[in-house]
Amino acid sequence: MIKYDYFCPTSIEEACNLLSKYGVDSKIIAGGTDLMVQIRDEDKRILNLKHVIDISNIREMSFIREEGDYVIIGALTTHAEINKSQIIKNAAPFLSSAAETVGSPQIRNRGTIGGNICNASPAADTLPPLIALDTEVKIKSIIGERIVPLNSIYVKANQNNLLPYEILTEFRFKKLPSGSKTTFIKLGRRKALAISRISIALTARCDEDGRVNDIRIYPGCIFGVPERVAAAENVLKGNFPTEKLINEAGFKVSEEMINKTGIRWSTEYKKPAVEALIRRGLKEVLGVE
Image 1 (cartoon, rainbow, N blue to C red):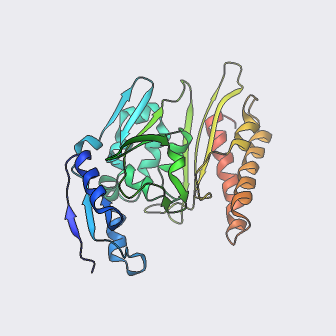
Image 2 (cartoon, rainbow, N blue to C red):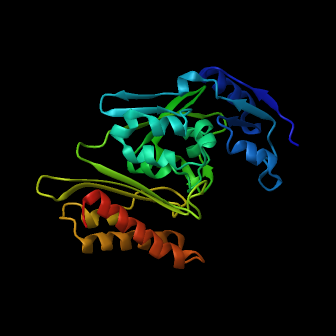
Image 3 (cartoon, rainbow, N blue to C red):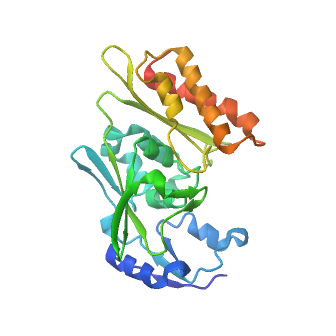
């Protein structure tokens, strides 16, 4: 049993002051769907945990709103709220779909998008669409605030670079161009309550002539640090979508996976699987039979 002090701030300022005071000996808890497991699991136990800062009552961090061409999401917004939001369904449908695949209804009602991202797991379901959307995050501390690209906060799998006194407060992305189509596909070991083995988020838009003028491809679970696969996007960008080019794009994704992670025991399974998911997703968003 871990003994720790418990704090429940009601404002971002109060939370930042607590983090500044207790730093590396403290952990933030929001929905608690991950931290509580780590506290109870001896193999994952956090040895230096002395203070828990519960931010779930900071109402200013729970919202979904539009600001011109942008959508802003508070870090304490739950997966259920994201899934049901009409703003998200209109601006980024695949983010709504991804939120719907997280855990069980109970977890979706408690778990937050901020927690899902700050855990830095490559298998986070909301990560692929957020990367495809070129999302930025706002990070606050007693020193001030900084706004950075979401992918820049990742060091490696399961590790972010937020400082002990910082708190991620919101996500910001630009609405997709009119006519864009999106898809999110998740592959797990079962149909429900599954951790992603591979996931993909795709968005594409074609011009009046049928050429691809906007394409974004992000495969989840295969990179330690998230980034879109530009080599695969460039195969299709500016061209008429054909089955041949779609197949080539799928190959570029698996090639990038192997270049970054090397040949591993799972490569024999992951290579054809990720290629198949990319092909399926691209055919869906590009309208190729």
